[in-house]
Length: 196
Image (cartoon, rainbow, N blue to C red):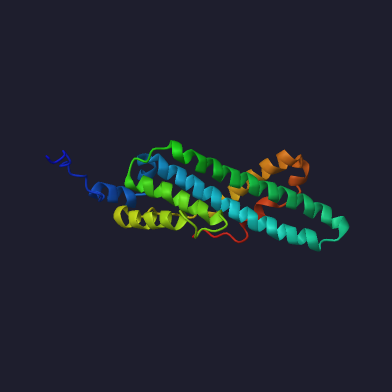
């Protein structure tokens, strides 16, 4: 019996000097790999969703503590905050849904895709069940080989603008546009965020 023709060598799974330079130069990553751009958008939407969740929780407490006459304004703010959180979460989920249709162009692009997948498990009831620890393990291994992505938290002004945008959309969807202008929506969303 003769040997099969399996003498082809596999390509090395290390990053080139050029790939490492690209990873260290912000701005070039987005141009190089669409998966990284999706991951950054997803991460930003996730962060805004968490900020809006905290706002909604604070407003919920105010609604519960408010007397009936003043409770109406608090309920309007709470309703808008709840819907704004839904809108931000939906934006993150839409980016997550794009993932299977985007081809990574680099190892860092694959890292970006796995960051989204592993990041999504934080919302699952039990992230210790298969396959989540296994995916996290693959991600750690891949980061050791390819390097990690610089994950910057968006600046406070960017988060505030996104929150205002989702709150305006929520107010519109709920038919509460006239009430939204009375609320200090933008200022309230900044509480609890940081730019670093």
